[in-house]
Length: 378
Image 1 (tube, rainbow, N blue to C red):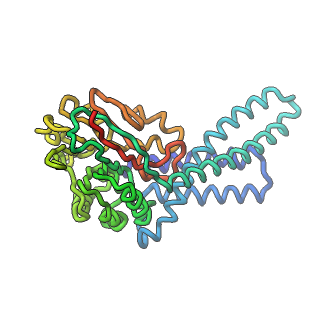
Image 2 (image 1 turned 45 degrees about the vertical axis):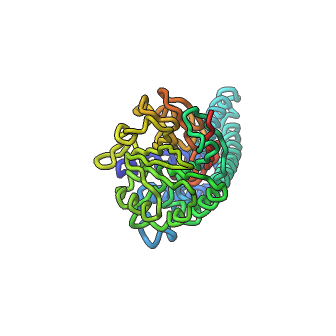
Image 3 (image 1 turned 90 degrees about the horizontal axis):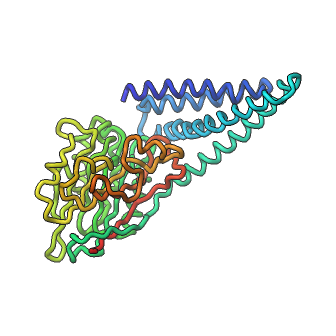
């Protein structure tokens, strides 16, 4: 994580220098405006650097939440500024080539000024939209058909709650909002498929306290995600989930009984886990092939290690649907799917975009969701 912070801080610093050139130097603003824009860029970059470097350790988590929110949100504004200003620079080059030589300086400055203003407005507007969208996860309904589903479970509903990312940005109030929406849907089973948290246990345990209020007659189950591993306090988080009456699937399976018939729910540790938290699909799915089996794995690519092991439906998250456009184009570089339903190496997989956000509390073209999956006997 230290290396990630170093790389991230370096990239942010270099991008800020480039943004300064395109927003301040190239348009040739009057001196007061140059100072004002430069001061804003420096302040926002400083907030982003503090957030990325994990330096939010003074006071309580609530004391530093605004700093993290501002710094991380600025990263999305900066992303869209870079994309828009890069296109504007291409326009400026074309203008410079076609303008008369004696007019190039004046025309180029006008183009750069117009581009700076329009791109800044578009970047701020898009990010504002993304902030509003990210704050409101909704229930999305879908159906999964299976011939192996016992008749007693026909019509059973499964709420897939994933990628809550409670911690630095998302506090207990956001967790409570998500819990209320899940409970309002009245699911029979609730599955938390990892990345419930993304911060150290000793500082952020209160952020997930509302999970104790989750209600499902057939049980609430969870597995670890990569961010539980990254926190360095995986064991404490797993123990806390158990204290909140959540059944944690640690490369294990459980039987769920209804009207004398049973199905199996199995869960595996995240792909990034090591040691006692290393994933073991063979162990998790041992003895489950004769029953309808829900398989909970944080990352969709785990299906590639679970073929021919009797999985009827894998429930995953991790991808966030890309979270912020255009990152959905890059998800396939790591994962075999982005969102929704797919069959991966013979394993049916449903991947949620997730309820929360990692890093910036922003979602663009990847709305947050809490899928409610109805199981039907084919």
